[in-house]
Length: 141
Image (cartoon, rainbow, N blue to C red):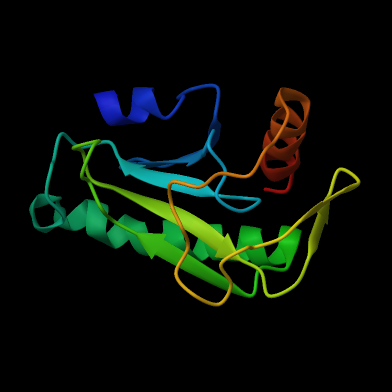
């Protein structure tokens, strides 16, 4: 596994693993259900990943969108492929909500809806709520 995968908490944040990709729950949640999809290849540019990895990525996107829409009724899903700090190919997945979302008896608002997400502003989740979120998503599969 490359350093970007490890930095995002693998294996403890693992939601699903593919041949070329991992889907991890972001420890720093932008909105409830924020994920990161990371390529296992040692590539630092999207244009250099293998054809097989590109092909598999479609299945990853289908899985992620179905998961977030079914579990949290996400209105939109934003994908950000930045690779500014963490060099390996990865995409941040930010589910977007037009109305208040209730999770573990707490209310969460997508504060920047409908504008682009603010990716360095995180919602406050207790460790207990994070673990609960991880388990909910894992068991939804």
